[in-house]
Length: 223
Image (cartoon, rainbow, N blue to C red; front, side, top):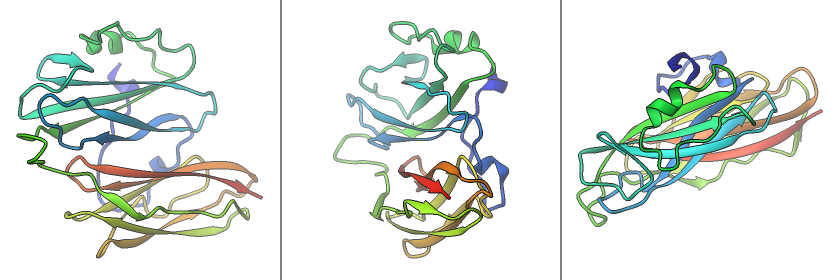
């Protein structure tokens, strides 16, 4: 089953075909708070690209040591958060309390399933956060339509007290560099539109390297 689950991995800037998503993939998840305190319930937003166009449903849960579910976070050094996307009809749905997600995941098929997991530090209290997620200073915006084969420069502007990296994922076209490090909160990343017309979805992930992320999604008509 583990071969069927694509785990989100961070690496340095590179030209990567993995940035072009032609299947169902959870490319990120935005977790609030990014470093929860004991007693807090997480808000988890899976960031999914559906390159296959089949549609999907999502499931989220978190585990503190061996205890899993969606209950308030218990005191511990870390919490592991999971976000799963399934094509329609592929997943029967989790157990009612998600107490044993590993057993459920082991029975899922190879195709039509995507998973990402992240380990986050648990803060001593809400007043003493170990980490706060980054935020867009200006949310990246793309034109409603672009020409086939057109090179599009996406301006990036984010704020955080840690160095930020932006990652780009699209359902078509090419990405010369999978990621870019922002300098003084500013940067630019390139997407090259495909040579055939059609609708293309994409997302830019702003990553602080400590578990906090922000996302900006878009759809462009390539003509």
